[in-house]
Length: 282
Length: 293
Image 1 (cartoon, helix red, strand yellow):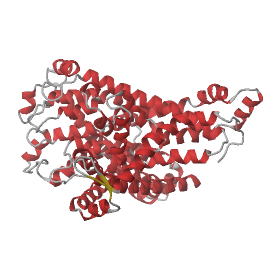
Image 2 (tube, rainbow over the protein chains, first blue to last red):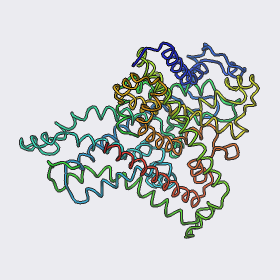
Image 3 (cartoon, each protein chain N blue to C red):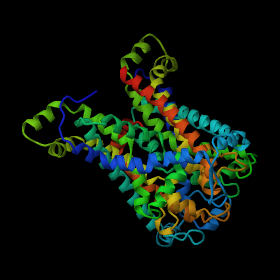
């Protein structure tokens, strides 16, 4: 700080505390609602201190889902979300790291053409090609499968760019030394490039895990069986009617469970998360 | 930029690129080409017969009051989301950059909403503002506000804007904080010695130096409002009441999936593709410029 201004410091903390409170309030209300009986929520205004139904509500949704509307157990949904998030994160990292290795360390016909093909995918988010992509997946018989949930989402231009940028900063001397020592390209990739890329891989993993976990439109389209719902889809399927007809206590317990894994990843891997976010720039 | 040292192999680079290119062709290019193809066709109600109709789908769209209305809704929605999101995050980041004590705690407490799925953010806000049982609705009613977003379009818009901004604040915040921390302290100190107060220093030094970050975030936030907020809207208003929150992406989904209007929905997809391409080009021009600094 440049100078000492006690009032300004006080104001700074006041603004930040207000910001933190505004950001945290929805979470707090959600948590409180997830520990109440439905009748307590329905009696306006709902209490703002946690109730005693924590165990009852959470074990209900984990074992058997809601009692009206969707009856899929949330534990299955959490499992599906985990599979989807891990498959997307690991799949994306794997195929992009080898693709950028090919683009940076080899000269071959059509190299630029392939690079532009990957680049253009940035301009085609799922949202603009909803129905044709759905048709392709349906024709391939991949509806309601893990492959259908993940494979169409693992091609990523951003991850390929990130690795390409990183490989460009790796000194040429390393590749030269490897060649002089008689190491082939894959040996160089495994023993030199991969260990150097650890940081980028960790950062990208955090971002892509959250991306995969939070997918909504895609699983909404291709999962119709309850056993394939992800946690995020499960919540929207539990909203069956007007606000008086929903089992808000169970929905809120599910919401907390669905938010917890990605939130933990962000908070515990904060350093990698910030790095990944600022470097992928999208 | 090119590498001087390269490896030689006739087949290896193709094998390495194969998975990515295969997925790109099957799930990106092929559907995109089909979207363009469907956009020029008309299908009967049973999907038995299709005919080539040229630009008819597009003409129908631009004559459709609902579609033009959806354009206006999207414009209002994305401007509100981008500007309020950027303003709030800039304020918080500027403050977080000033504090010495508790900086990490504030940062941690402000960034976690990034992890919340847009659909869940929508559910949380819909619950707090639920017309009959919401806790905030109760307070608003106490203050004499007639709050019911299920009936009133403006309030529905306000709700989806709030939920979308809430989710995006953490992202903007992190970029602004990184931008603020890269501004040399000597500049600020020099201005302070010359007698400039904190407000003056912010507007004449910090804000202009942050403008690349601000511009980048503006584009990212508009893209976010256009596409990623689908979950917020589907989980809360579903485009209603009376299309008051039906943004373009939601209309593509609704017309294509719920109303099964293949041609019309595909024509809308093609228009959206043009919008994304424009936004991406703007963003990359900017990134290139930044690299030259």
